[in-house]
Length: 80
Image 1: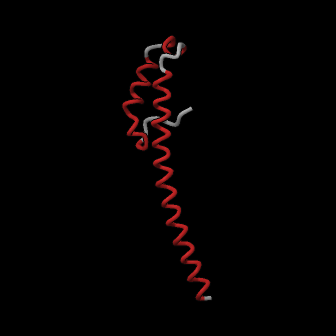
Image 2: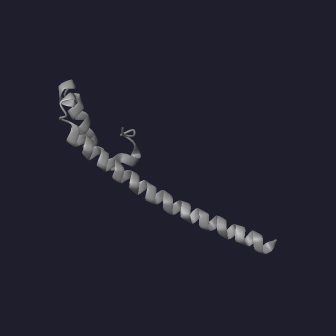
Image 3: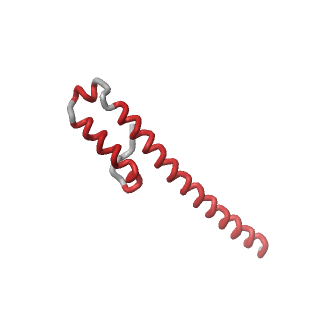
């Protein structure tokens, strides 16, 4: 199962998404015979890579926020 495809976060995977959708548009037999499986795996890998990039950005921002909170608590403890 993949997330919503056409979002701003997945712009780098646009070409793979279009090819995957075109493959599915060819009809039921293409999907049922596994003709789109390679594109599906490519899309999953691309989306995974994009998700990891987002996670790294989020992790670094959380670390910065935690450092600020620790500093503020340290100041509060010193002034108490």
